[in-house]
Amino acid sequence: REWAYAVAYPNSDTRAAELPRWLHRYNWHRPYGSLNSKPPISRLALTQDNLLRLHT
Image (cartoon, rainbow, N blue to C red; front, side, top):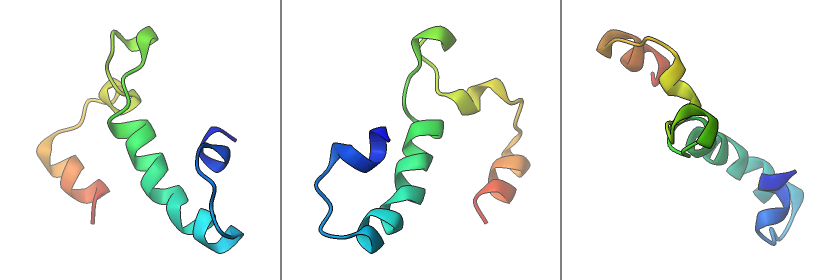
């Protein structure tokens, strides 16, 4: 719900189109206090090859 109500979207299609970008920011960039201000993705031991695979 946090993502859906943070911005006044003009319609559901626009809101749905923004969800993947919001999820990326939430999981890859947003700092979490319980993770010492690191994003959730930091919990995975990813190598450069894994990162490329996740983004393609």
